[in-house]
Length: 121
Length: 231
Image (tube, rainbow over all chains, first blue to last red; front, side, top):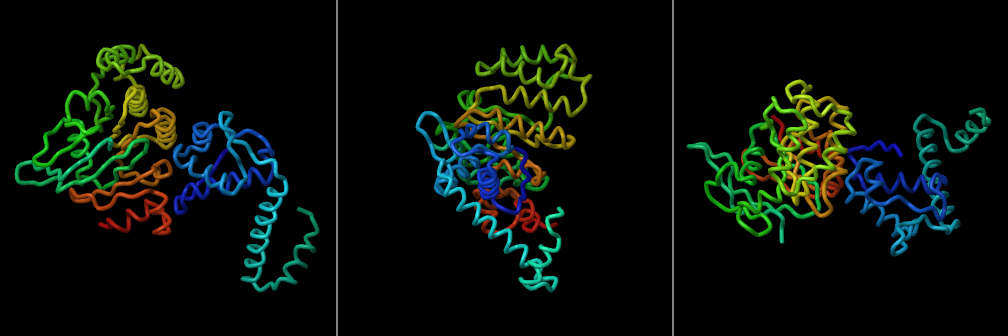
């Protein structure tokens, strides 16, 4: 895991986002056990307290859960993961439409433009 | 009980007042940045906590006790300038630490030095500045302390060495221990800080949770610092 951080945004929020992406992209699989807080902190080169805070947030989102003695696991609720995936896809699409609008493409034109690229990329 | 508590601490050298009514508490289990421009009192405050200078007035409590033998046992200190005899080899310095501190973990120090693939029969004087800094940090972090105080650990080393130093700090502080890092190289270090303390002109200007401050000011600690202390 190689994370780039923007010092302007709270680090734990960036960690939550990154880990969320790992989960919805399947890079970390449903039901997979997460590394310990310390190991995760070390890999991402952040403070263990910050990592802890991020994991609590993910747990609040129900994307991970704690098994008392075994550690933390990614949820096996695929519907939930799909829900977050859709949410994220919506956000990305909105960003695309907004950016296109800023250079004079309305939504319809923006979609046509995407189609014209036709999956060549 | 707070790990460190400074109550109305003043320090003067002759007529010159260096620290003015410093009140602060250092909680357990946190990495704290002591941030300030050059000559604002960072090192003086650190030296007071380490009993290397005496307070003019006020009080510093470590684990609720006055500074003394007990506080020295639980504080592991990396000074800004080395105090080691550079004609010593790494092996000799390790022995030295072993003799001095009963909480020095020789095994750990050896392992960390091995990771650096250093020849431990080498004299300190024969090593580059960056290497010397690394060796000293390894020694300091190999003590099982309650509080690590690192005075400018990043000064004058290259970015790769900086990364090594940050990693070593992150991986090696005890659970429940705290780390105070004084620096003016904020951008390099702010990612790992739980809390920041801004010191200027001998006074504590601000103490805050790092992410809270970022949210509140909508910018990096480095930017906030630059704005606050514009020369």
